Length: 118
Image (cartoon, rainbow, N blue to C red; front, top):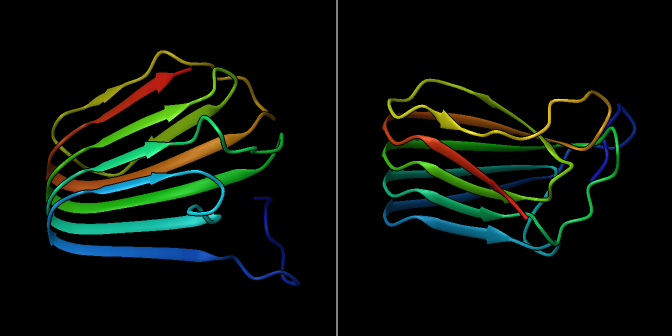
């Protein structure tokens, strides 16, 4: 789970469903980039057991008409949220530079992004 360069290609995991959300968590199911797409359904992501080194970045892209993202991370992880959605972002976590980072790109009509810390 480190930043990639030209010599090491980025690994991407894609999950698609028409109706129903996705649950993601643990080292075995997460790659450097994860894309979840659904017509109706959110993404429930638990990264508390994932060892993300300082300076590394995980990217999660959520595409849906209806459905948000519930993200659970360790207390030291910086979360960046981008994209367009109705529902806003709830996160009161750290914003220091250089630590592990999770970038969430949430694209959808309804559904926000909620971040909780363990």
